[in-house]
Length: 336
Image 1 (spheres, rainbow, N blue to C red):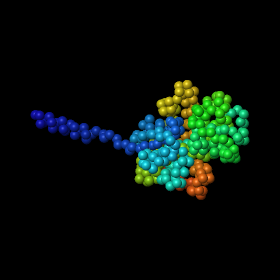
Image 2: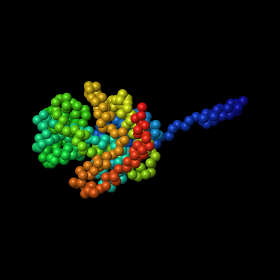
Image 3: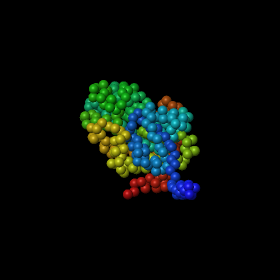
Image 4: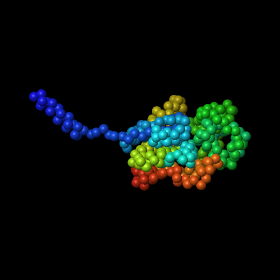
């Protein structure tokens, strides 16, 4: 009798095992974000992470806020500590020129998100000569943007004094105290400056300057060996963009949890930040801009001889985004 019970239990367990679904297997992928702090730039990635979109495509994604700039991300890519990196396009191109096995596969922001805010008495770019202009740090995105703006205005960097300050809020404080005459700011400091009456001399997004503010990069060797995995990752990222654009309430909640703004600022500015990114900055089809590569190569050519004559296409592999667009996947995300 006892033996029959044992056989009965074994048979029951075998039956359950036969018809139960195995736990889904996920590919583990680590993506490093090189911003110095949590940023709305990564709203689409945060959505893909927190709304289960990566898992929908078989990806167990670990999103790492690395800090330290894109150069640190390049080192992590080369060491295979991460598989993808979100960071400045100029750094990626510079690394590739020096022989690093890196390739840009999607854009995060093809437009610059900074605005040039000045004291009231500065009415035109020509008024900047001899003035003190604030940036976060030398070699940062704000420093690059400042140089691009100056070149557009035919002003030599030697004609102004560049001051390294540390952050947009610190630059706004320095502007109010009269320690600097202008600053390259991001949101929400831009909104606060405007409310306090400081004029916006220029918005980079309106200046017809193609600029790879931030891109998603990987290594060519990883892409060759893991094409399917990379495709599913980018597919999830593209769907994260669509989710951000199509679901304001949910996306605001993701930004709220990630950005952790002060309550007063959150109430006043969070929805404005969302609207700006959803309508103006995030592209449905996130191709890294070839013209943006050309802008960076022209900029780097002053100090990097290899940038002269370099083929812009050699820094890009847009094939996965192209396949998703040609196959109708991207358009399907916006159909009601």
